[in-house]
Image (tube, rainbow, N blue to C red; front, side, top):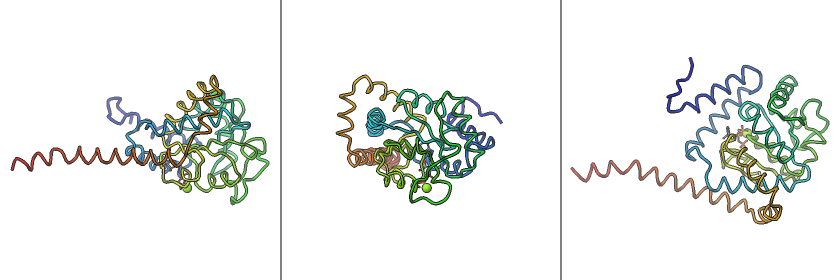
Length: 261
Ligand code: ATP
Ligand code: MG
């Protein structure tokens, strides 16, 4: 049944439809659909727009990408399904390599993701025939490329699983995550946790990359001054403010009602 354009949650329903379709095409894993639901819940709480602290983290992410020697963007099924075009654009502007890395890895899925990314305009996509392993991770999830994630100094990992984010951090890489859950192990392990929705975060980072490439001194300043703990504290303060506002909004009419009686 087509989603009516007038539906108040049209965009959200279309995104869900897109993910279900991507699952049928062998791009997104079933587990990815569940992960999307976790993300949506956090996005309601955050107001479904980029918060000021997220914007600060996005600028920092751009600064680290611009000043990196070997930046890599890691792509999984949900990322390819929802943001292949944003990944391709960001990879081109940095420039960064793109590597497909799957939690639920099959060679067919890897090839399928590479196709999707190439179609979206990404030219330098790694993934099939990996030749290295991330230490400390079991099974196929550790598979990667020497010329990609293995030797990268800065890795952007949107919608990552905590185990791999922690393993990449142990490899002394600068890990930039995009994850709506500030409490996930990924956000906690990342050097620069971006707590924002993927399709908002990637274009924001891309815009900052363009600005900072034109102003290298500003990029160096942002890298020097970014403070993860302070940024997460600001994000928690923002959530507290949101909740306090919600309390006021819900309590208002009830109080007035009581005053009358
Ligand atoms: P941990 O990092 O502790 O392992 P987890 O098991 O929830 O957390 P994953 O299974 O990898 O981690 O889930 C991916 C994460 O991505 C979830 O935390 C979810 O909130 C987040 N997420 C899902 N969809 C989006 C999206 N569109 N934009 C940003 N974040 C998202
Ligand atoms: Mg996990």
